[in-house]
Amino acid sequence: MDVLVAHHGYCFDGAASAAIFSRFLRETQSALSDAKFHFRGLLYEPNAPPPGDKLMTGAINAILDYRYTQSPYLDWYFDHHVSAFQEPGSELHFRADTSGRKFHDGAYGSCTKFIIDVARERWGWTAPDLDELVAWSDVIDAARFTDADQASSFEPAAMKLAAVVQEQGDDSLLAWMIPQLSVTPLDVLAEHPDVLRRLEPIKTRHEALSKRMEQSGEQRGSVAWFDLSDAPLDTVAKFVGYKLFPTATYSVVLSRTHKRVKISVGFNPWSKHPRRHDIARLCERHGGGGHPVVGAISLPPGELAKAKVIVEDFIRELNT
Ligand SMILES: [Mn+2]
Image (cartoon, rainbow, N blue to C red):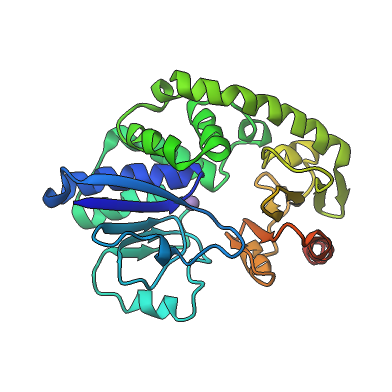
């Protein structure tokens, strides 16, 4: 039997969700103890095909940490994105499901924690050796770091692995790493030569980007704003903005790659001021999505001018 685990691609929570879910399935469904597991990353790209198109006929199919689909091939579903139901009618379809294998809870900080909690409550399945993986997924996906310095650090093993998954993630790397994550302690896996080799250039790019953000950043009211659209972005640094502008309540970053123009919006997790906006809802107005505290809008690469108009809108809105 084949099992296809389609997960949010190239994000630590997506990979950790796939690791925990595949082990859960192996250990609780006796028919699947010898199954062949396939992993497939799904991206939030403009014009991304409906996730149902990525499923495999004749296999057990799961979608984790990604949008719901009404596809009849979907067997298992776990997600915590509040924007999970994008296709018309998909939320009603989900609510009408009677399989007992499809779960959604927008209150969770990570899909990984959601899966392990549901598996324990409904199936009595536990995996105490994965506690560290679960805890770190929750910290990373919900940005529950102690401060902006910890959030930008490459010291903890989970942060090294997360950087590699995010920046060098592809299906062949994850085909190796996901099964490893389900059985290997994080500090052992983070010292693997294949991980270290990929990490070095990431650190170098990260330092260069930090400099670029320092030069281009400005604070407008309660918003730290970075226009990085002058040159393609080759890395990400989600929290450097708050290191540079610790008094900002929000950050807005405009960036582009050859595939897309992206507006990333976040709430400063260490802000002294309360969050007054639901960022997912604001992003949805422009065809994006995410969580209440962090969201993004992706546009085709030719729409930089349109993106700049949206940014102005956002900065105004976040300052009201
Ligand atoms: Mn997630």
